[in-house]
Length: 130
Image (cartoon, rainbow, N blue to C red; front, side, top):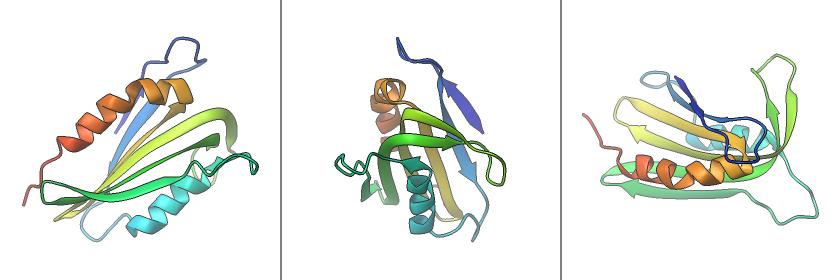
């Protein structure tokens, strides 16, 4: 499922928040998904590395939280990609009993920053269901 995130003032377009669940044993390893998400961004090699990754728990639920920014390669895998400069990512991967659930927020940097507190609160509200 994908949700539109309203553009922050001055940003040319909205962001989006995608939620993915593929089923038990599906969706791939957490670290390979994180690296794929990071790989969708090119960054200025002279700038500090913006990639952040943290493993935490929300209650008893293991969650990997990530963030990066740069030029985003927008598009579906296998199709042509559209580079979007000045974009950012906030993501979370929750390790549920029936497989991981992926939450990926991408958009212009100001839009992602404006939605950041809501994204963080959403992730902190996750609950483990057996």
